[in-house]
Structures are given as C-alpha cells and as structure tokens.
Length: 284
Length: 250
Image (cartoon, rainbow over all chains, first blue to last red; front, side, top):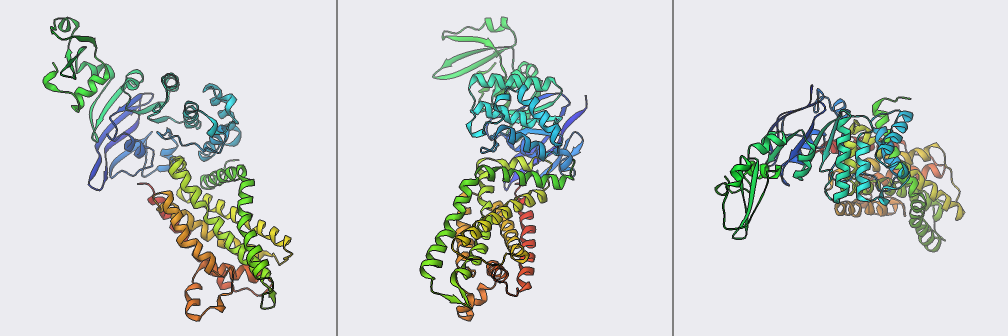
C-alpha cells in the first residue's frame, strides 16, 4: 500500500505560541488513522494545514504525492473534508449544497447529479434532497456534510471531530458510516477527542499533546504499553488507577478499600503516555 | 460541458450567490425599494418639488443619483453576506478547501455584487416611472453602473477579508459608505459647495459615478475621464481583494 498522506517536520507558530512542533507522519492508502488529543493539542491546526486553510510555518505536506504548497489545486482534488463546524448553506437545500460542491470540484452536471442521488440514497437522505438545511437536525446535517465530502470521490477523507455534539445513537450511526466509507477503499484521517471513537474505528492512532506526537501505534499496541488489566480505586476522593500485565497479577492485588477490576482501554494508554493526568507513583 | 477550472470555480461561487438571492428575492426587492422610495417621496417630491437645476426638475436630477448610490450600497452589501458565510456558516472554508483559485472566488463574489446592483438600478428606474421620470438609459448609463458596482463589490470583498467580526463590518459601512452616499453627488450638485470642499469630494468614486450616470441618463455629453477612473480604481481594488483573500489563510 502506498503512502497517501505525508507530513515532514510540519510546524505552525502563532507569534510566540507553537501550535505544532515538527510533526512527521505517513498514512497508507486505505488506512483509517486517528489523531487523538485533548482540546488545544493541535488537531484542528493539523487538519487546517492539510486542507489548505492554514499555512504551515515550515515543513512539507504531500497528499497522494501532490505538494499542498506547490500544487494546491491538484492536492485539493485528492481529499474531501468534514469540518468540525457544520459548514452548510442554511438557506439552500441538501441537493443544492451538494450540487454546488460538485461544481466547485469541476464535476460535469449529469455525473454530479447521478452521484448525488447515489450518495443521498446510501446515507439515508434521499427523501431530504429538497429540504432546506436549516430545517434538518444536527445528526442529519452531519450526514449531509459527510456525503458532500465524498461527492467528488476523493482518495482521502478528513474528518475533524465528526461526532462532536451528537447524541449516542447518532454517533453510532455516523461511526458505522465511516467504517463503510473506509471499506470502499477511502483513506480516512480522523481527529477526535473521543477516545472510544478512535479505539473503535482506527487501525492506527497518534496521540498528540502540546503540538507533538507522543505515541503512534495500533490501539492494541498503545494499550499494551500500559498493561492489560486495570484496577480503579477511590483514594481520598481521587480516582487512582493501577495497571497490570496479566489478570493473575491483577487478581493478586489486595486492598481494604473497594476497587473495580477492568480491561485497559485506550483512554488509560492516553493518560499514561501523555503524562498529563496520570500519576506515575500511583501506577504500577 | 467541461469548463476551464478558473471559469468553473467563478461560476460556482456566483451560482451559490444567485441561489441564495433567488430564495430571498421578494424580501430583497422590497428591501432595495424602501430607501429609494423614501428619498423620492421626501427629497424629490415633497421638498424638491419646485426645485430646478440646469433646466431639469429635481426629480430628474435625483433619480440618476439614486441609481449610482444604490448600485454602490447594494454591491458593497455583499460584504455582509461574505461575513455571515465566513464567520457564522464557515462556507469560506468550503471554498478554500476546493480546487478554486482565489481569483475565481473574488470574481464570483464581485459578479454577485454587480448583479445586486443591476437589480437595484432596475427597481429605481421602475420607481422613477411611477413618479413620471423618464430618462435615457443607453449603453453608457449601464456601463457607468457596472463600473461603479465592480469597484464597490471589489472593495467589499477586500474589506470582508480584513475585518475580524461582523460588528467591524457594520462600522466600516457607517464610516465609508454612508458618508459617501450623502456627499457623492447623489442629492445635490457638488459645484454648489465652496471650492475647498469640492476638491476632496471629487476624489470620491461615487462622485464620478453620479456624474457619469447622470450625464448618460440626461442625454448630455459624458466625461470619459470618470469612466476611466472608475475602471482603474475598480481594477486596483480587485487586485486588493485578491491579496486580502490570499492573506485570509492564517
């Protein structure tokens, strides 16, 4: 599989503030890559650079081989993007929003209309084609933005916090759609601060903290770095988590206080590897 | 038909504005008719009914001035729509992430501003007919409107990219457009003012637009210098708009 997203030493500075401090990354064709970090870690800045909305201070980005600074038009044809903000024209219908997107990407009228019909059907929006966007619920609007991003059949789909602000049932539906899109061969670059989303969807996950990638592996690989089992305890009003390599090790744990034994999840790995909230002396 | 990408991008941006305009058409027309109607009633009919300048009635003097003024305000009004699309709906991100050059984007928005200006001119001419004012609406009349609206639509795109929020945009309209509307030869001939006041007022693009539109509408000889000045200033502001869109990527 070839590399379709390449970042080399990408830096972004706003005056004295460094938002990204030398990101190196390569995402393979067909991969679903999650970019995980707390608010302010630099996730949206990375997506804005990748999609040409923000200039990087230094570094190099190639999308499907096209340099985003030197060949911006060719690079932009390689991707579709779902921004964190719902950027649909509220006064236009679902169909009009999608049709304009197709025109922006130079699609011929007949082929874009055919593709819109296909996408609206597959995203369960066929009966909403003539509905004004302002009359749609948040979940339906999100589906429209994803369908629109796929209209010109991009190689890469950037998803910036695609399920933020949605209720649990809609989040699950959107995640299923993301899986389906990947299954058709589209490379997906997902930013999220919802850890379970990355764990459920991604083949590889990068942990971003204060503008740097601090860990990069499969969800299972990242979790293995912490352990397999965890015990949560409340000590003096604080939640303290201890990690263990095996269930036998965890079973040997003795305490007079109550505790909960559970599997390690990606959130444990994130907290341990970023060192932002974990307390090493209370770990294993 | 496959169009060159620059033309295609421009048409897509322009088409978006036309779709929105179509959806708001009745409101837009009503909104564009209110101010000229009030000006015609109060200044033209009630206050200026007995006035005559250079052998024409005040209504005949006022109507072309209103056309020039309205083409300015309506073409400049796209700045507000761009701001709403940029700050609240984030539509600007959609354009910036698409394979559309900044030149195509600016051209599409400027065309939208010019279209609004033409609609406003037609509305005022319709109102003029109601007041019994019939003038000459030949090619030079329309050329002056197009150049004036090109200039102010380009200015609107440039300023919309420079402002940081919607409130700043309103402030710019108050400080730039409103004074020009009243001092740019719409309501009175500039030569009635003292010489030292006339000099700066003759530098205003609207003064030249009013003169050009009025001369053409009254069938008098036009000053081609005004047309050239509007075209050159418009071209400079178009370039400025392009520069500002380039800078809008933070």
